[in-house]
Length: 259
Length: 272
Ligand SMILES: Nc1ncnc2c1ncn2[C@@H]1O[C@H](COP(=O)(O)OP(=O)(O)OP(=O)(O)O)[C@@H](O)[C@H]1O
Ligand SMILES: [Mg+2]
Image (cartoon, rainbow over all chains, first blue to last red; front, side, top):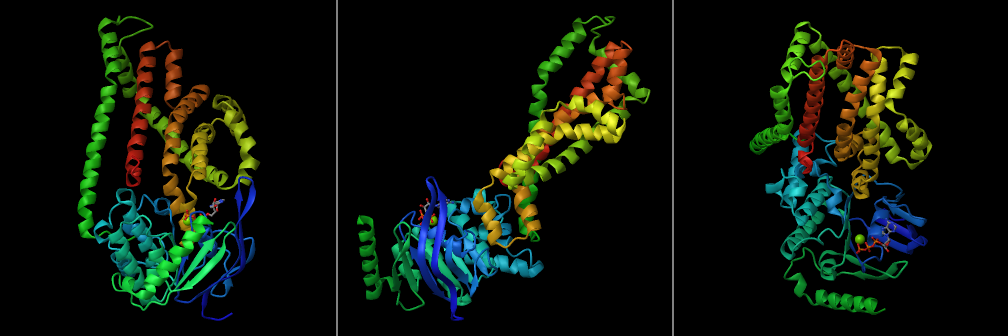
């Protein structure tokens, strides 16, 4: 095992209870994610993207094989990792203002000015300065999701696990948050595992794209994205390599849909 | 917690004023709801016979109450009953939240304790009074025990079902943020359960009053119940009616206070 790897799965199997009994969701999955790498997980609805991410976050137990983070088996949530849930409405504390939600993960070990600074910084990164004293139930879905992202960023994680974080956002906010995320990642060198439905988003953000397919799910494809960084919403998306990857992935998805 | 800065203070001050206004309007509308009762009492006063031994008019009740007050019996009795009820509610809430929380969180514990608790819950609290008096003796501890015994269940059951209906994502968020057990209880569980707990307390409050009066009547320990029973034994109908009004007002005020507290406490959750 190299010291460079952040996440590692070997023959990972995950079973979840279902109506007819235990159902295998993920089977014999091998995966290696390098430190500082940006990996997107693509796949149709219900393939097991969330399940895989949750197993790597230590929230879902796995039944076979191995899932490791920085060389150690993951069995429960690990310090240094932050998770952004798909279901933002239930991941936030409705009785705390946006700012105090952002503080939740760090207020236990920081205090005073340092806490304030970290929280403000995270809020600024997602552009919620004007709404920091609102309660989440008074914010739009996209704004609630940004609160959740800020809460993860405030922890200054080494690894960021994001489950369709931009799914609820309009195109403009989405593009701006994608660029924010890339900037944060370039600055902090965090490893990012990013689940998405959106092929173009996956190409624009990632170093590597993993396509999950089948039931139980396996990795159908692993695509290396060789686009220069820093990326640009206009210039990057006009590069021949971008267009080629886009073509290739849509093609692959068409096959999956018709399979 | 982060210190609130000056700019955040203004809207908070305005919000609390708005809330006070809201509470005043609520109180006014509650009093409005009492109008039929007040009208009935006025009618009774006008049409009633002041010398009737069984149905004396409200003015006679007032006179009887004033007499009890000047003899220095009424106020201590009200305070005594209030103290018993308030203390029992605090103890019942603490116990109910503790036990109910554990049962809600652990299916195993629910299976172990479930039938026993179900049995205890169905015992009518009045039947506990003689047993408790035998074992503990006629004292404040016994009184507290029987009131808590009656007031515990609504809080306990509400807390249990509250824990069971917590969204798994909320608990997972807490886990993935590396919150310790204490932080999880104080920052996640208790605030999330607050609506369920308060509903339980509001159901428990009238039960606590009932059992407190009952215990006072059965044992003649000092309190409103004992005054009421003494008045009845002396065939003092005016005083009985007067004390009944006091008991009614007592429950009304307690419930209104709990309702106001609930709406204040749940305001941040957008659920008041
Ligand atoms: N808590 C659970 N218990 C049992 N089965 C589950 C649970 N959550 C998900 N599943 C099952 O696991 C499979 C994969 O679900 P998962 O949520 O990982 O899909 P996904 O790829 O994230 O889908 P989507 O894109 O719609 O979010 C589904 O078939 C689902 O029925
Ligand atoms: Mg999902």
